[in-house]
Amino acid sequence: MTDAAPTVIAIDGPAASGKGTIAQGVARALGFHYLDSGSLYRLVALKALQAGTALDDESGLARVAETLNSGFVDGRTFLDGVDVGSAIHTEAVATAASRVAVVAGVRRALLGRQRAFRRRPGLVADGRDMGTVVFPDAALKVYITASPEERAGRRYKQLIEKGNSVTLESLLRDIRERDARDSSRAAAPLKPAADAIILDTTGLSIEAGVAFVLARYRELGSEHGH
Ligand code: DC
Image 1 (spheres, rainbow, N blue to C red):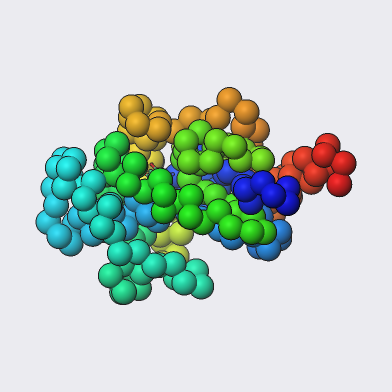
Image 2: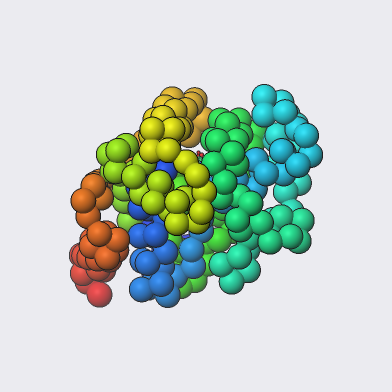
């Protein structure tokens, strides 16, 4: 892979499957760049909420995505120059992000921004359609999943630790609704690529997930004789 485009490892899957933490662990282990594509949808959602763009105004939302002033520096996320790392991780923005992600014009506008993260020595791209739409030529595609109950339990722990008051029942309901919306939309629905390896993290530690992806990646190298 010297003249070819930089290597991509595509990691897709539903919310709270552990894919973000696993993808970051893999990127760190390999010294690769990391793309959290969900944060782009979250930024579009936050900007739309701030600007008063209705979540059913498709052309308005596409324009928000086209003109989005986003920044990613040292693991921090900026919107219009303001650090919005915690603002984009509320349940309200997550729900709005899942709604703006349905809009084909939004997805189209974000394609180039996502592909710009593909730089040497390589990229670990985390999202819903990394292996199916954004990087269909990825060297390795892993689809990470876990049971809705396990995912709701993880999200519950995270939110409680941050001092939020939530109930497990409402999180499970949110996760089920979001899964249904992400999987049933016409534009780039959440589904494993035909050539993706499936990893179910129910009852599995983050370390074991990272080790699994690294092992699959190293197998690729040995298949190609290096
Ligand atoms: O991974 P996340 O929870 O930060 O993603 C937020 C929303 O963005 C999620 O509901 C689905 C959407 N999304 C998407 O449609 N495509 C991606 N590649 C990443 C996220």
